[in-house]
Image 1: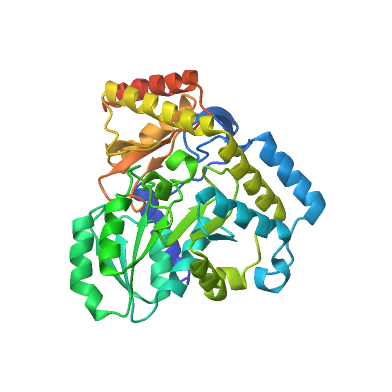
Image 2: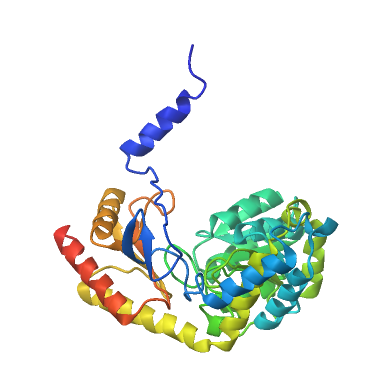
Length: 392
């Protein structure tokens, strides 16, 4: 008799043979410029802790106080008995920070896309989605049951052509894009995409997970392009530049009120803990009061990219602290990552299906937590392994 789980063994073996099996390392210390990983102290170029706030004393103090004040769990979904005053305080402060009418707090950035998309569009509607949008956008779009039309990556002309062809067949439409694309580090031309959307009467939505705390003096891509008040929905995460956990949906009050009535992750899953919420609130206050930390992130980014390009590495089309070191084949990328780790650097290899076949890379995440000595050490190790493996 065939084991009902045989297909799992077979597929796992195929992943191993194709060098696509994901081996998960263990963090033995907080996220910072240097970390303990699998028991080894390494220079960290792997986390999304852009502003170095994940281990900041102000955020830790706020979380500890919130545990004393509110306990460790909310006890219910937000619409029953889980909305605590601190949740409302955060939502007010985040809306103020971003210059929008309102915001709502959900459990994660992934949940934020699943919460926002199905209420905005449904069967009989159409979503125009960038070809390289994040998996959370793709999944939220599928859940909506709207027709999904893909336009070419960061291409307003392609968006315009697709809208002209398809929008007349549907009740209403939505344009959705990542702000900063997490694998390549490029920035969506949000101003030009918005022009197309406005011309055709589309709703507009951007996932700014890698832009908040990074672009627009830390306020995000909508600020970066000067589109405050013109844009309908901004999705954000609090687990990257903000250094904590949680997701945000921000925009016009009518949109937020509407989503709150219909969003399943909001209606049927317990609220974010008070400790996380307090730390998020402390993070917003810190970023607002310390613009120099965002400036430090960009200073480090420019220094590192310039150094890598001088060494002869291909860093793709990045415009942000995300630096893809393009290597091509997944086997080479994994070998390169393993050698970096042996030499004291944590920088993970990414291959298919996370990125297209033949475009495997090491993704370097610059942060404000790195010193110039750290960056020089990183450049030195990339040069050493790059020459060793014949990449440069």
